[in-house]
Structures are given as C-alpha cells and as structure tokens.
Length: 29
Image: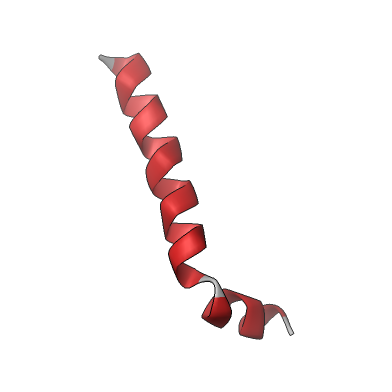
C-alpha cells in the first residue's frame, strides 16, 4: 500500500523535497 502511494504521488514527494532544499539554500545564502 505504501509502495502504491509512492508510485501514485512521486511528483508530490519530489516537489516537497525540492521546496525544502530551496528554503535551506535561501537561509544558507
């Protein structure tokens, strides 16, 4: 079931990680 969720929502997960990295990069600067 968890695998199905990851397969159905991979873009959402990527967007979440990307946004987090963007925020961290902003603070680092």
